[in-house]
Length: 476
Image (spheres, rainbow, N blue to C red):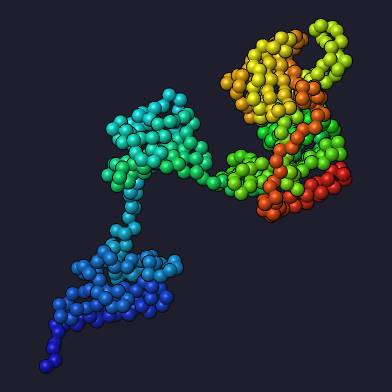
């Protein structure tokens, strides 16, 4: 028996078919495939039910089902899909679109505060809306959470608040590269240090000395700190007080550090060359397989000597080693068995080499003095100090480059300076000319690794240096 339907149902079916057909004809086929939503007529009940493109009925009552695809939703495809044309016949879908496109309140809100002089952690927690009890829970958390207690002016602290008002996270930014992050977990708060790695770019600089090393460094775009590091690399071979001449040249390959596209600092010197009075010195940075870093010549010899050539940085020589010098105070011919470096009172004095302190204190005309024993046959003396460095006393061991005292004018002197002596088997030697023993070279077992690790950097240095010297020779 053929089942008949009410005329109202038939009329509705005709109208809906016309609307759907018109929509499909006006819409691009690709959009329809990705966005399509059809409306079916249940001939049994007379209800309108939205379905997906595959014909599955979407759950919910009527055409306002919340999980129906909405205009502009491209989740069905792996590419962005353009919005389908407006369908004036689907009022229910338009309402659904409006609900889905409403602004969504973020789950977590961050509040950041600058740490100012006098600020306390408790006060900053209160600014963020949290009490001391929660603060104690945070700093007593696991990991490095307790380090949140050490605050310094200039840092920034941020608090993450969840939608229910609870604390989700605390972030203390100590610098652009280092932060302390404390997160809430199921087991309480856990803190960890977060280090951002800057982008490293290689830079080259070259200059010819006209008046001073620092002036040439500035002309080449080097900071004073980099210039000091350059002098430190070659300080065992070149006396930067006595040996520097106009016309000396240097070239450097070094690192620049960038963060978010902005330069934040300089890194280390990777390789350098110094031409001093036609004496050529080259050095390259190398980290051995045990993780120890230092500078070496291209053939693997250490740039470091067992002794520094000069124990005071960039001081002026006021009196040289001279066995027939007239004493400025006693006004008699009296051998000057050392080198005097004139410098301001308080200038740091460094140990020329690793050794044991065998004298620390007053020593006659030397004033306040320190004597170091290096091995079995070498001693060095540092006299006329204003004061000794903290911890420097008889029997203590010091490292090369360690500050052992400060320039002064104690003893028989006319002004502040360091008197420095170098003795071998008890005999005085000229500190400026005595041959200094080398430090240990690259072990034979590591030479191949050294060559492979430094070959590219040295090639860069040679290429830039040769091109730069040609430019300097042309006067460009």
